[in-house]
Amino acid sequence: MVLCSSLLAPLHAQLATGTINGFVKDPTGAAIPGAKVTAKMVEQQAVRETQTNADGFYTFPAMPPGNYEITFEAGGFKREVRTGLELTVNQNLRVDASLEVGAPETEVTVAATAPLVDTTSHTLSGLIDDRRVVDLPLNGRNVIGLARILPGVLGVSAPQQVDDARGGPEMNVNGGRPNMNLFTFNGGYFNNPSRNTGMNYPPPDAVEEVRILTHNFTAEYGRNPGSQVNVVSRAGTNEFHGSAWEFLRNDALNARNFFSSRVPAVKQNQFGAAAGGPVIKDKMFVFGSYQGLRDHREAATLVALVPSAAQRGGDFTGLGTTLSNPMDTLTGAPFTDAGGRPCVAGNVLTPGCISPVATNLLKFVPDSPTGEITSLAASPRRGDTFMVRGDWNQTSRHRIFGSYFYDHNSRSSPFSAGGNIPGYMGENFVQSTHHVVINDTYTIRPTLLNQFAFTYLDTPSNQLQNQTIDPQTFG
Image 1 (spheres, rainbow, N blue to C red):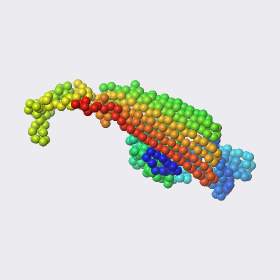
Image 2: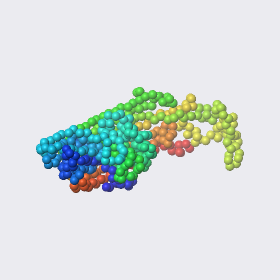
Image 3: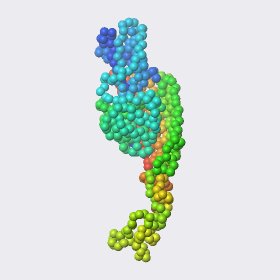
Image 4: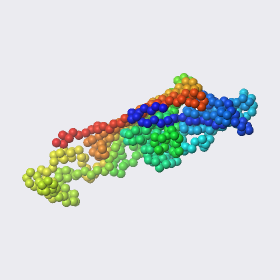
């Protein structure tokens, strides 16, 4: 396995696949060795074959998630077909068969469901399947927000967009710290190297399922001690499918902040589309999605105290507190103006002691008859997310898939470094994610696979000032 990243992240073998296995027996419960077992992925008609061993056991490792149909065949027994088997990522799907004596041309079809308990693995995990991903409400449309429905998961942070290197999804799993989780996407490393948080995934319409391993992981997981979050994207099938969406949020029903003079403006549009289908039927498939975010909102500050008109001129007689004349720490003498008068007398500042720099700086401080202000200023956000995935079932033994994910986010803040004066200092936050996964699986024989995986992750971010005041402006 090869993993490349802009920060040379370490390599691990997490793969977005599952396993199907079980026993094949006759009506007396005796094992049937050499029985032919065929697994067919219904959506892409991809087929894998194997045979049972001397104990009647078979296994299909590294199978892509999807809906499967499994056929069991053996000489002297009726052919049995199991349908409706859903395989999810990191799942060990147990499918046993008891073949009836009869002609092989006779077929027995069984509509089956997967067992609820995994009897082959001690790992504890939770699944968020495609139905929950699409049907459950999501504020911000970040699929990691659905982790709240799983036991042992608390403190879920699933931001609508990643603004900077410190952002990204977090969660506390079984008492672990929020940045101790390992995130993967289509089997590739998907953590923010800066703060070890996750990166934002494609929209729910492009996600097939989310599997979160919470306890007792196997040896392939070892980078982070917290949970292992595996997200798999949708893939194209033999049928064309697509969807489009538009979500609007505004301030029409918003309440006014207690400290604000009015309701901050909000106009947010989140829109996009996803579609997939065959390029070559039963062989090659493609799926893609796009989501855009246009958020025109205002940022509001906390209550700030500003000087009155009299105080701007140096008159603090209405302050209610007696001001003393400061002392020069070098000479021990009180400060005076050029004429020798004290700088502070009777709570009034001598005009000759007021710095012209302070006078020019006060021009940026708003006036308020109450002595308090809460500033409102535009703080727009923009996001563009794009993903494309291709699958190629070259032969029944050889399968290749790859995906490319791009996420670009920007946000403008009128109040730099926690300030509260609009127009004084502002800054822009720009963050991007580039993620590439290539996976090549070749079946040498039913119990021996060769799997190559390549991952590239780049997560640059910048924080730039978009408005500053030249110090010479103040004199």
